[in-house]
Amino acid sequence: MPKDKVVLVSAILGGAGLARNHQESIDELNRLAETAEVEVVATFTQNLKKPHTATYLGKGKLKEIASAAKSRHARTLVFNNNLSPSQSRNISDSTKCNVVDRTELILDIFATHASSRQSKLQVELAQLEYAYTKLKQMWKHLSRIQGGIGFRGPGEKQIEVDRREIRRRIGVLKKKLDEIEVTAKTKRKKRKGLTSVSLVGYTNAGKSTLFNRLTKENRFVADQLFATLDSKASSFYSHKNENIMLSDTIGFIKDLPHRLVGSFRSTLLDVREADLLLHVVDVSQDNLFEQIQAVEDVLRELEVDEKNLLTVFNKTDLTSGNHFKFLKKKLLKEYPDCVFISAATGEGIQDLFAKIDHFIECRSRIHIVAIPTEMKKLVAYVYQNTEVVADDFDLDNDCYQIQLKAGFEELESIKKQIEKYQLMRYINS
Image: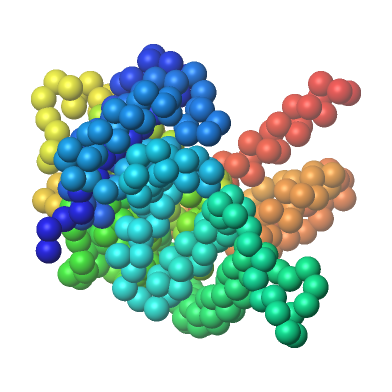
C-alpha cells in the first residue's frame, strides 16, 4: 500500500530567536511522521508573535500550504502545534485538507503500537478524553435531533448526545483499567522483598535495549519512537547476587499530552513504586538537555521527582572525539553520580552494576536520624518512604530517634530538611 502523503506545518512562537530549538522540534515531528508510516512531501514554518485566533497561521501562508499540498497530492496537514477545534475546522475549510495536530499524531502512533489489552484500553481512553475537549466547536450547526412523536419539547443537541456517549464509554474504560490495575497490584505484592528498579527516559533512548542487556531477554526493540507501550518486568542478579526486579516503561516525549500520562497511570505504577529509577539518556542527541528536562517534567507530574534516581547516559558507541570528551566532562560536573554506557555493545555495564550494588548497600545499612518533634510532616514522610527498623522518643532533646533503611537520595533529602529547620530555628531564636 502506498503511504499517505502529508505536509508538516509548524509555527515558531515568540520570534525567530528560537530557530535552533525549533529545528530540533521539526526534526522530532519528522520522526513522529516516520513512525506513523506516512510520507512527508513538504515542510512549512512561520514566525509568529502569537497564533491567529481563527486559523493559527496567516491567510497568505495557508494559501501557500494549500497550493503545495494540492501539487504534491497530499491530503493531510500535520501541525507541530496543538490546535483548537475551530482552528482545525477553519484550516481544513481553507486548504481542503485533513488537519491533524501534534497530540492527535502521537495518539495515532499509540493506537498503532498498542498490542496488549491494557495498552489498547489506555489509548482509547486518551483518544476519547481528547475528543471530548474538542466537541464544543466541531459542529458547524448544532441541529436538534430526536424530534417527533414521543420526543416533543426542546429536543437534544447532537453535541450533547455525543458527549453523553463519550462519557459513558470513558466510564466503561476506566472500570476495565481499574480491574487490570488490581490484578497488577496483586502481582507486585508477590515481588515484595525484591529491590525494584524501573527504566525511564525519552522515547528511543535505548531503554528496551538496556532491559534486554541486563535481563538477558530478547524483547522487541526498534529504532523508532514509542516502540514500547506496555510495561514489562523481569528479574536479574547484581554482581553481589542480589535479586532485582527490573521494569521497562513507555518512553516520554517533549510536550507529552497530559491525557496520555493520565491514561497510562496504571502502566506507570512501576515507576511510582520503584526503589530506584534509572533515567536513560541518549548521549548522542544534540538536544539531550531538553530531553532530560522533558522526562523530569513528566516525573514531576507523576509525583516521583524526589525518588532515588541514577542518570544513565546511553549510546556512547554513537559519539566520540573531542566533542564527546568536552560533553562528558560537563555532564560529570552536573550529574556526578551518573554512568556512561552503551546498552548495544555492553560498554560501561560493569560500572552500572557497581552503582546499583552501591544503592542496595546504602539501602540495607541502618541509619539513625533525630527529627525534632515539630517536624511531623517529615516524620510521616519517613514512615511512608523508608523502612523504619526502630523508633524512640528522646525527651531530653525533644526529638524522635528513628533507625531506618533508605536510599542515598531519600537519606540526603531527610538530612537537608532537618538542617534547614535547625538553621531557621537558630536564626529566629
